[in-house]
Image 1 (tube, rainbow, N blue to C red):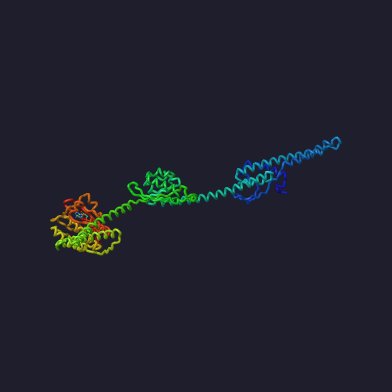
Image 2 (cartoon, rainbow, N blue to C red):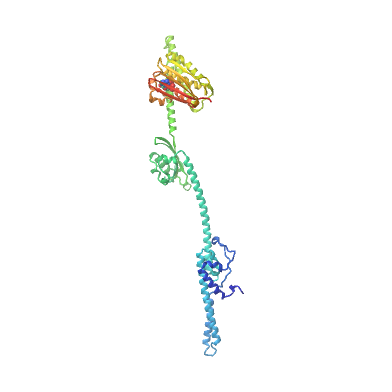
Length: 529
Ligand code: ADP
């Protein structure tokens, strides 16, 4: 019987060892015999198999022994008068029983102390190595308590594991949400139009750089700040408030504002809130998207002005044609000479009408990119010469000296011949129109081989253009007020020339002029390599 668990007296040894080990936990695992299969992980929750190293020494055992000894004593004392009382042997047996009882009592007390010390240690250790102490503890009547504690600790472990898993899951979701937030912030940032996102309390929750720049705030500093204190523009604040307070289904709104001298179109869209979707009137967040519509407004204003101009310009020759035709119909032209005069006026007016319509069509086709362009390599000097030859009779009529300095025909450009011819003709025609009799018009061509370009200049000694009008010279329908009396015109010619040279041929228009001295219009065109 070598197993100590079967020797009651070996308990004392175990107990004393256990007490020692309770004081020095480091030696515990070496002294307490436990199953090698035990998982060292305190949180694994696996049941541990113990080989009890101590018997359950109950104090009741000693009570039993004491009772026997006491009973024997009482029996001896009661039977003393009869002479059959305690013999010396019986007294010795009672003494032995008493000693045995005392030993059992001491053993039970020490066993308990050890078990309590182990329990405390195991609990403090978080049921780690000290769980091996369960063998000692279960050997006492504290076993059920220990068992309950173990079960409770297992429940806690399970709960902790669940919480750890939930924490891991939440961390992952948080990382994902962070990445998504950064992505949407990046997308917001790249938007060129100002964008604000508000919560259901009208507080700022997101904004892009364009919005920060427009309203002059910093998103980080103004997070959760009421939008009313960020935007100073009353009208915009009012529309946002109305949209926020209205039914979510009708909250989408559009409005236009003037902010810092620019026109903005605001598009306000409600942010759907799932939890509040049932409450139609609940306040809701929203996205406010602003768009700079200054150019569109300008374009539409210019379009209206253009239509008004066109209508006005068309009406003048049309009224003239109608009036003279009526006079002819009414027989107001008595003689052939008067009739011829009326026919000439009608003819001129019809010509003007035709020119006006042609110019407008050409300009709008070039601007819309629908003009049919037929580019081919042409000798620019041939085109210029042709235009000069056409204009020579008109110049001679006004006694204007028209001189040309042409380059050799080798200088070629890739151009639409008809459109280029029309531009050169327009400039020479203007020079002749706005130069008084006896003046001079010089057409000069200068090649700039290093710049791979050729310059065609039309210089006149005419009335010139006031300095303040120079920037507006190429605008549609612009005519210099002071020169209006010199010639009839539409104010579309120069705009068409600019479009042909710059938009169609990738060249450049130049102009210098001085009132009373004359003007020089130039066109720089890229040479063919
Ligand atoms: P139009 O000659 O039909 O009026 P243009 O667009 O060709 O239209 O010219 C616009 C205005 O520019 C003219 O009304 C005229 O006042 C001014 N202008 C054009 N060319 C000259 C020039 N060579 N000298 C002075 N003024 C000019």
